[in-house]
Amino acid sequence: MGTIMKNLTHYYHYLNDDLADPRTNHFWLTSTPIPIAIILYVYHRFVRSWGPKFMENRPAYNLKNTIILYNIVQILLSVILTFESLRWLYIPGYYNIWCQKINYEDNEVERKVIHYVWLYYVIKIVDLLDTVFFVLRKKYNQVSFLHLYHHIGMCFLGYVGTKYVPGGHGIMLGFINSIVHAVMYSYYLISLVKKEWVRIWWKKYITQLQILQFVLLTLHFGHVIFDPSCGYPKWVSFVFLPHNIFILILFTDFYLNEYIYKKKK
Image 1 (cartoon, rainbow, N blue to C red):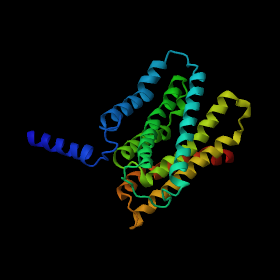
Image 2 (image 1 turned 30 degrees about the horizontal axis):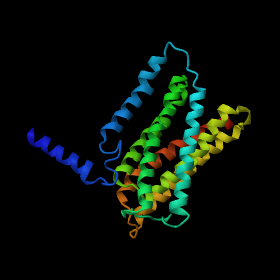
Image 3 (image 1 turned 45 degrees about the horizontal axis):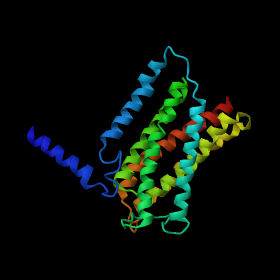
Image 4 (image 1 turned 60 degrees about the vertical axis):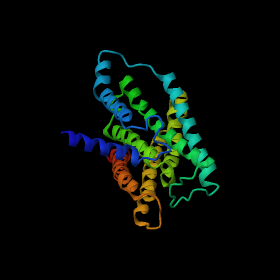
């Protein structure tokens, strides 16, 4: 028994410390997987069990003002990440769009990179509030498998990206996703503040934008596997691609059922 515990401890330290990027391994919510595991467990239990049970004999909460503020914060954070990626990485040509290895140099840009990678990870945790709001407003139909899988998966990928591979090729994921989220939360904000401005086709095209995002990211991470000259770790693609392809299938299935098959009925 003592030998088993010793080996488990050894492998834990190897995975948690030896393989981690020392620049980010001490960051909040990154140094150990325990906090994010607890957050995701509580999140899943709340939206699937505790929350609906709590709301069973209560009227839906009116969270309009809270959600308006939440959407504004999400838009601002998404715009900041998009702008900073363009300003420091892609417009100056500091990062190669096609293939970018992780740069471990201690300079101003790379210090910004690792901190923005961590910020993106924290934003994915904040995104979990989307589902909490659904539950408190009794919009249980919105709490689909696609919704939960996407949110939990992005938190997991955010943790892995921040802890092990902050920067390099993976920055494109945060860049593209931030653009999509800026559009998406702008739509949510307008639908709350000025509902009469909303057009029925907006939601359809936002879903198309989300699908395009996953197609681009599949190509972006997929070619790394077959490019021997790319210095970005290939294991990241093997971790990311199954999740991305699966979520692409789920979003495509949702789009077909919602906007194609419904019209034929």
